[in-house]
Length: 176
Figure 1 (tube, helix red, strand yellow):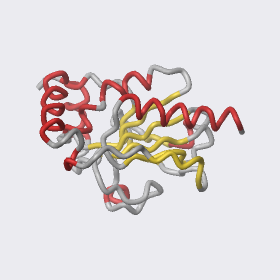
Figure 2: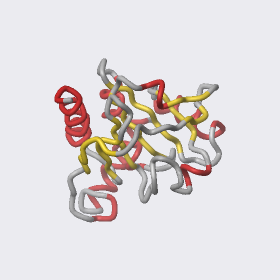
Figure 3: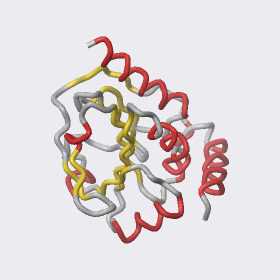
Figure 4: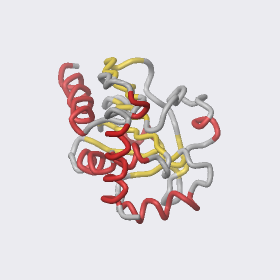
């Protein structure tokens, strides 16, 4: 199924649920300011090799934790593509699908996703990685240029909310 059809279906589902997964009211994404130590994590890369988050320091990193079957995560793909085009931002999808490359590679091709994709390991799926518990899919975590968590949303984001989280991380970096 093409990306636009999936996005349209996801929008219909969201409207039927009151605009948000679960039907709840929108809550602002968590912009917490830079907290903790830089995230140290290496994941298998979808394209082969490994994806070391430390190698992305100096950029604002948007970690988009998703599954290929999540309509809410699929609805965010266009906004993530746009964010990845910014010179100061790197988007990294973190696929939770236990089938890994077998399922995620065809999804990526069909979705025409060009940003980096890492394959979650058992620790990430169990909530025992530096990303912590992942109570919902999608979850978006924004890392500042030092690799520290700056913001987090455990739900689907609108493009404006994603932009606001990125802008907050960029402002904090300029102020530092």
